Length: 426
Image (cartoon, one colour):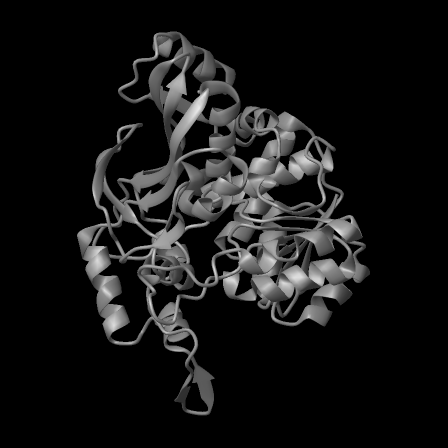
């Protein structure tokens, strides 16, 4: 595979480091990787860090479709991985189609809230722009794999695995993400892209129900306490907008799909205050001297960078999918998850666990595509493929999956847990 990675921030660096790490255990599948970023020096820094001539730095404006197409031709690229802010998704998606190459992103094209009832009805949903072009991509014989990070991405594969192996009937697919991260000296801080965090946290959360379809609620609605394994413990989680709710119902027969994330009350208050002050705006530019910038972009510049705070952050993050339903006539409740320790990821990859977890999903998927294990055309989500080779390969990249039963009646609980965790390297 000749791969173009657009965006060399924390996720882009993690992708490069994970590919090298995975080759030790899973074999080489990469012929060349072009690391492209608006900041050429940053791209070169990461290429030098990897220390492999197959990793080539390039300068690129992700907002210029023709520049992307030209870079694809220059390096004979056959697949694009988009790991920049989702505001650029449409341009990169269209460039991949025009160039006739495969496409993958970690977050789908953006939503637009309903003009009259934003907290009741969806309008333009996450990924609508992409899935509306499914037939066009099919006819051209190329694939766009949308939502391939950790959430969405790994969480969607876990849902598919549960459907294939663990349940006869599924009631709910509930993605739950929590952590015990602490950044010394900072009560609130951004652990991931500031731009993206504001986007997904302040947009109306979306929920799907079989009898109702997709609908929206108030921000941070339906708080619940969820127990996370690995020493994290109980964390309050709330609804936020996320792609799994748009992806899972397309492929998995169930009654309800939700996404909830552990956001502290202090962080929620900070985000709502930013919204009240208009600092969340990304569609209105203000003049600063001779330049124009949106309030959100300004905030992304002046707030402490997640890349900086990552080095001192301690704790673990858990991403997973909680599925309920029936197996052999008995009620079953299963949480399939992946845990990453921040300081461990800093040592191995030079990036935080948050971005390393995000990067491992697309890297494993690219591995499977390059080796002809995952095949497809059109616009698809991770649920479109066999989950087994993905879950097995996670351990090759240092991020094994795990499973535990939650309040199940299922009589093979202990045996099933032991088999799963032994098989997948926990």
